[in-house]
Length: 186
Image (cartoon, rainbow, N blue to C red; front, side, top):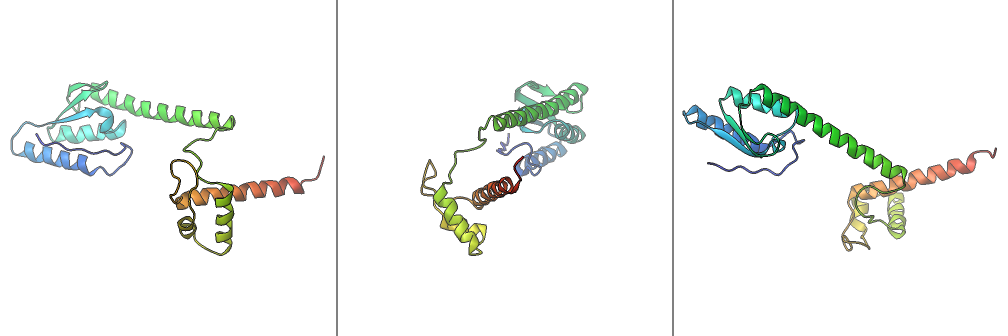
């Protein structure tokens, strides 16, 4: 038994360890050995169409498939109808979870809650970033000159993406404030 391990999201399309495992299984099968690919849970291989496509590849190579845990626990014929239906249902589950998560984020935003990690920016950092931007410096250069002064990341530098969001938010608020000042009173 050869172990393969990969810790990436099933949404990632390039999964080198999975491909190595399937290639190894195909080589063993070609030499006449009965081979079963054993996976912790079907969700680690993929969901929906990805899982169905992978199952078809395994079926074509006469490679068995076994899941140690989850709804599909046990040994499966990768080309079987039950497996195909359950793979489709797991794809629907992913979409349901995604939709519910997005609904929750939108609900939180409406209530004025921030989504994501703790804020690492402060007014002094914004002021310095604005000054450096006015000098024509890139986001990467600006980020390299700033320092986080609060929270768990205190003493570290913000990412260029954080600087970009901070400046974008500032610009949007400034534009909104200008727009509100220009509108005639009713």
